[in-house]
Image 1: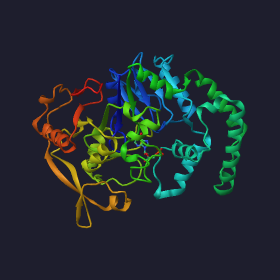
Image 2: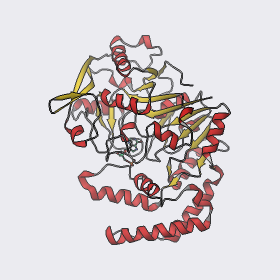
Image 3: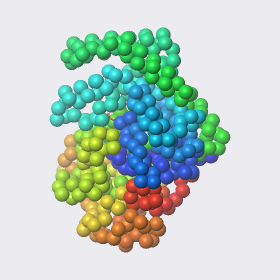
Image 4: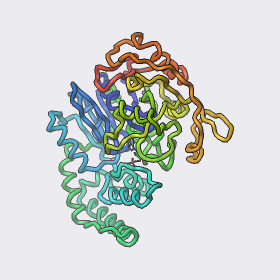
Length: 428
Ligand code: IMP
């Protein structure tokens, strides 16, 4: 019996899909605990690419159980589409895919308000994925949200839909000048969605605990990343959930003592999509080169990602917040061919150097990173299978990160394919 959490140590897009997919070999159950279909987890199997948004990456492995926990917000239309797409590609769901009855729903008005509020903010926009994530979590906290279980009580569903739609129509029309929604249509479409996903709906908190107590290996699959955490990230330029370790417990119903390992997925450099501070961002040709070589375009929205050097101040913060004990270092191959590689080891602001991640956006936007510089390497490393066969300069870079963080590597990823990986430690 073992439980491992895999989470993003940066601003998302660290390559969690591949890491989860690899560790799933040893797992029996894979659980998503936060976020929604704002995530885009890319898995490449035998040269074929799959992008998962809401469904746990473990679905790609026959016989593994996959669960969407209560902490996830679900757009049922998007879920059904994803299920149908994967089924059409030969993936089976029967008896091994479950959705929490307690998970909150993304409603049509959440998507409308998400897009509208971004458009209104102009240059101050957060750069959300526009999928209704923030408004859905806001309703959850305001205690007016609809949950998956509401889809199966017609009276409750109708009452809540009518109440909410009538309320949001007032705001939509009077304040924002938007078209009103028809509550009856929303009710009918959600009733229909409910029927379609009914075979998968379950009391997943009990289910996960039962599986754990039966001795199964549980993998908790994080979405987004530490610095997008609504509590600990670069607020307000964050998502609306907790992608850090705390969210894994509230979002599944598992108790903290269940957790054995926390794997922080760390890209060998840094990227971020959307707005907000990014201390090590490179808005020059080095940044463009990272974007081109790393294929840094959003898996969900196709947006070009902002690129920069690895930031160890931010990574140490991520380690502290979630108790990361293993690192999965990804995309090391993208750094091949760079003459010099830099790593941020401190922040300088107003003449002071410090090593903590500040909450103030103004400081984050105006600080100067303190860098340590490494010599690069030119050898193709994508086919390297053993750590010792990496070029000396690559090893120096990788060792430095490990020593600074004081953690072991679970793996080092050298390409998109499963084969292009050096596995160093098992997490189950
Ligand atoms: P939201 O989650 O759609 O509300 O977007 C809030 C912020 O989180 C925006 O900056 C998004 O670009 C970012 N974000 C959300 N999901 C992901 C993800 O899976 N990877 C990277 N960034 C994300």
